[in-house]
Image 1 (cartoon, rainbow, N blue to C red):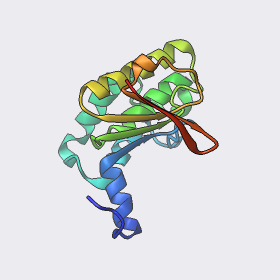
Image 2 (cartoon, rainbow, N blue to C red):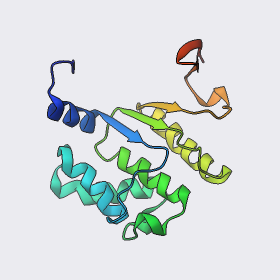
Image 3 (cartoon, rainbow, N blue to C red):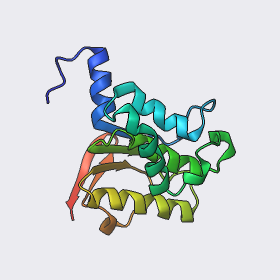
Length: 159
């Protein structure tokens, strides 16, 4: 669907339905519980029927390994747990495209591995996952790698 004719509200709705964004610094709302952070994302665009939202949120928290934290606030979680909640929130509306900005940049190696495994699973499910990182990567973990330097593409590797 072309988006150039959409007004700001329509474009915002389109993004909410089609793109899940994982921010480097989580961007979870600190005054909402983990569960409410996911429900709010679903409430904004109404892709998921309201009667199914809580079950979907719990399923996503389970998939990312943080279901036991549903009633906690983001500040009560570790960085790795917050990032997994942020991933669950990005998936709340079942988007086909997930864009992740430095999703492992602030995590230890264990949590980085968990996040990478989640993204691998999403790719196997047919989702497109675009990850932006400054980290050295194992190219075998990706379907394609695009290297940029000063905003210009310097190398494209289809793997």
